[in-house]
Length: 355
Picture 1 (spheres, rainbow, N blue to C red):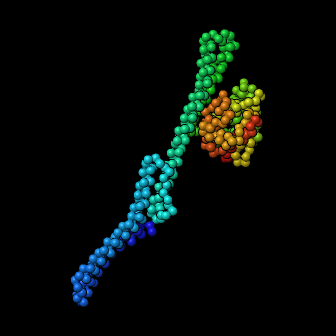
Picture 2 (cartoon, rainbow, N blue to C red; picture 1 turned 90 degrees about the horizontal axis):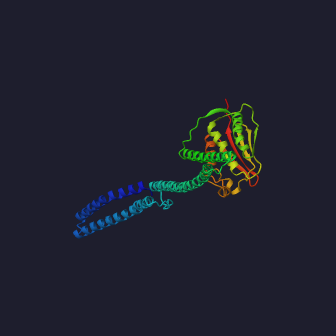
């Protein structure tokens, strides 16, 4: 019986008891006057009615206590557990109904939400500590190199123009690596607060990627990596995109391929293909590949494969999560395929622009 019915029954019974007592006394007195029953009989009858009323009151009190206050005490205990940080104390809704059941369900919903929030907070705190550890490790490597080569120039170790140029180029390269790490941190902050700035334009995707290939190709050539570009789209195919952020996607994916390239003659292929109302882009390399057990997690924040953990290249573990975020904010989606020892291919799809 729900709370409203319990209270209604209780009210009716409690209001009926005095009436029954008065009527009973009146009837007994009437009978006494008519049949001249002894006064003691009248008093005994009244005491019996009073006793019955007291017993019924006790029974109703117990009934209300077990039906209402018992559940209220359970809720108080449950809320105390919540305030103490214990989100595992649950309430059984199988034996309740009506308003009490609604209260229990509301508590359970709140408890599960708080538990999930607490677990997410702990998870993020652990991941943030891991990020700081990774970034600290990754920053030390280029800083140490910059310091060493700068000291070499100052101390005269680089005693020829050729050596000086080599040292300066190394310092520049390590400075660019520092810049990349700091940019990743900036982007991570934007992702975490959902504040990545976008300026969308209609762009010809073929022309856009041709420019990207020209820029990236010069850098890859110095690293003995061949960049291949295949455009299988119609000439005027356009998309709505932020060119700066999309450029970040390409740079991050290619940078990841370069980082884990283990072939003497590396190859990276950028391929544009038609997918009916969308454009499909593939960026494929012939690097070391990704293990099957890691493939489903490469776009997660902070995730680093066993290969990256054991690699001198390191990595913050947020580069591909940035890629995923940007592609999804463009209304697209991304996935990866790979085979260990043969290479990895990143696929992403973005809708075409139609007049």
